[in-house]
Amino acid sequence: MRRSVPTMTYWATWHQDYLDPESDISRRLRHVQRRLRHGLDTAPAGPIRLISLCAGEGRDVIGVLPTHPRRDDVTARLVELDPVIAQSARTAAAAAGLHQVEVVTGDAALLSAYADLAPADIVLAVGIFGNIDDDAIRRTIDGLTQLSKPGATVLWTRSRRAPDLTPSIRSWFGEAGFGEVAFDYEEGSDFSVGTQRFDGQTAPLQPETRLFEFRPRVRT
Image (tube, helix red, strand yellow):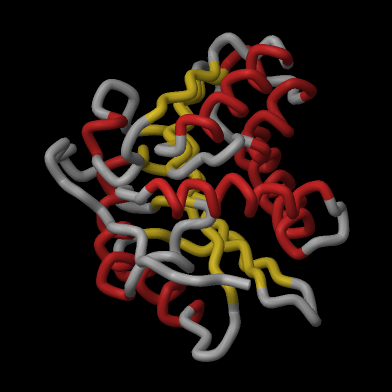
């Protein structure tokens, strides 16, 4: 994704909301981590490939792997454009002894970022769909068919604020060959966490493909 320097500064500040365990973003994170644990629990025996688009500080992956019994099976790539945020993820992974977790400072919207790791057993597209337009969401869902193995677990998030696009997103996943495992939300909060299983066949990787552009926006 292409972000200007002021937008990067915004995202670094945005991550401070995780310091409040009762913030919506912290509560959403707990749902993502729970579904990620289940994805690891149910992954086939043997090596597990994991990729995370727009990974931020990697709190979902780095918050789960250290204590998971399959941690040593996992090879992960977390891609984040903001170099300060990416370095935070890199430092956290090293501190947790997760030497098989690679944090890449790069454009997560380009499929070339995953060319030597895809298709993966677990794919995280968390914190993306609320920041791109509808066409880009559909394009991203289609692109996930290039990144996912048959049977892969795919996690995504989106606000349910009006106009709520999550019913359409869930339908678009179905059209692309993803079955729904779960759709988590909390009453009184806007966030939602979708969990899909890829029931189709992996599409040939087209590394030159760009999935999305983040929209300029002002959030409070």
